[in-house]
Image (cartoon, rainbow, N blue to C red; front, side, top):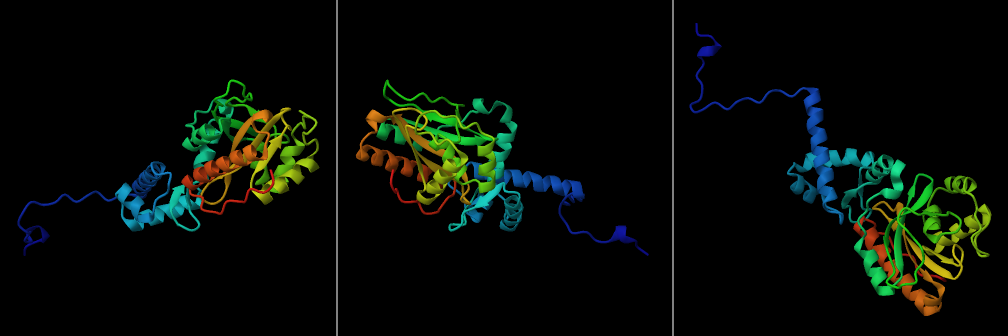
Amino acid sequence: MADGSDRARPDGPQQPVPPAKDARGGMTQSLDRALRLLIVLGEHPEGMSLSEIARGAELPLATVHRLLATLRRRRFVAQGPSTHAYFLGPAISDLWESSHRQDAGQRLMIVPREMVQARDEIGETVFLSEFQGTQVRCQALVPSRHSLQLYVRTGQTMPLNAAAAARILLAWQDEARAVDLLQRTEMTVFTAQTPKTVAEVLDRLRLVRSRGFDTCDSELDDHAWAVAFPVRQALGEVVASVTIAGPEHRLQTRASRDHATAALRRAAESMSLRLGWTGAVASDGEN
């Protein structure tokens, strides 16, 4: 009687059978694929659809959908509320911040093109600020074209009570956290206009949230004026502030301030849209 070895085999070369994957091998493959998705998304800050990500990563749609669901739960990927496009999520920024916390003032950042455009239109210094731990620091800067300009440097700490750049970021924190940060901050009085108490700052934060931006009129430096707007990610989280600041004598009239406010609004909106934010932009209000 013939055994199984004598069974007829189909003609042609035999294809090698891939070795079975153990659980560890499967985890490694999933990790590799998830990292591939993050790399593809990082190359497209304007956002990508599910099918575009699948094509870019050369992976099946079902696999990509499953991996994106996990990455969303862990906040490594965010999804736009109306377009449903996918973007890199806030956990990426959190990792970067954690790894650079000891040397936050030396972080290397590419200046967004919108900041350069706003500086060119208004002529004044434009800078981007972010929370680093419990402090707000200037992370990127486009200096004024004028010889006389306000002193702002990359890495500079912005006082929570006096700087519009800092109050923008504070305004969209949980109120309990905002109070805690303010209570632990020295309320330095820079000018006669500086908010001096936690209550005064909280009142200002409510105004900031209602109109969508903040101004600083001789509150940090005498005879200086600034306006700041939030920069948001896909899910609406405020991740940075962008500010235009200059001497009062060049930004003294209502027309000049309205012009600066409108230019910066466009810059902040464009930067936010590139990060996936699709929400409405607040009206100018009084400035």
